Image (cartoon, rainbow, N blue to C red; front, side):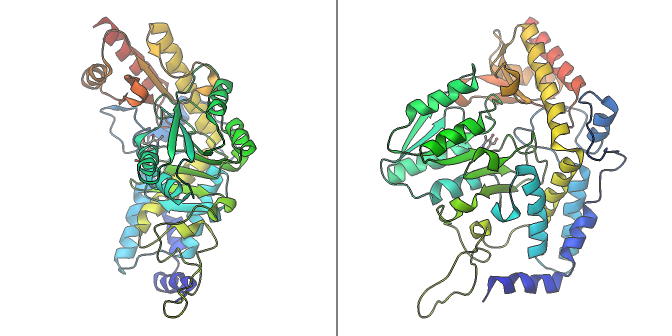
Length: 429
Ligand SMILES: Cc1ncc(COP(=O)(O)O)c(C=O)c1O
């Protein structure tokens, strides 16, 4: 059986699935988004209009997009509509056109082609595809940081235990991007094969210098994997300009999509090297012969890493939330997010809290991590939740014992003030 037939049959039965998706993705209610125009990061009216697209409760201030992003109503509606339509026919709805259409939106957000993208369930799955698919031998070295999330750590440690690769770490410097490039360079030996790093670290929201690290990787012929869980949707991303071979992200954080969706970019060059380990329908690129030769070929695109039935309505919802971000414009989203991050960092500095995120404007994001002298982070988190209705996240990664505040497009400067009021009160407690 040909894979193309697989899609064609599905299309014939579902009929116009792509059109359905587009209908469900009809815009944000009551929000005027200027076409291609710049939006003032402090335009209260506009950003409040954005906030109104989210059914997220106002009883608490949500500051944990780094953990899980809330979805705007139009993405929730898109899931519901698609599910209703498919359930009415009991069809899976997995058609080539729909798949490519949503990957097209993802490609515009990440700076790559639809054919270089894989649908996954989360960043961790993307990281596992890369980690386990790379041809590594006993003694080969992988360089990573001590500030990585467990989702991009355990896979490498498991391969270290199983295959004898060697995981080497450095603790990111908060002083300068250049210092981090130097820390990586100092760890490179003739056995180094892979750099595996976050674009934005989950621990402190530090932006690592992707292009400079890419140049270093190219100079030493290293595979370069980027964990983008904390960057896609928070800021413009351009994976090609970094020269990375793969980039994994979650749909359910800054991209605001349904929970259990993710994206993996694998460059064309890397697709022939990173071996697909989980394969099936959708991975194969043509006829296969089970009886005489056992021959088969993988799909020519990154789709080779996809297999089996998935929940199509969730990816339609992800398409809707990505289109929402694209319509506002990632430059606008980032200016707003970064300005809030800067205001929070400055406010915390003034209060005398210890800011663990970088102070340099180009290196901090809209995730700010800090701690205060008189209260362990878990107590501070509990206090802010109880007394000030703030949803934050504790940071134990890298032994930092800090509190993390994530600010995204539905937050505004009043939320920053709420955090500062809460921290000020906690410091006096
Ligand atoms: C940097 C980073 N990588 C990976 C993950 C894991 O994400 P997921 O659970 O969506 O796989 C997270 C989650 O917070 C993260 O911050």
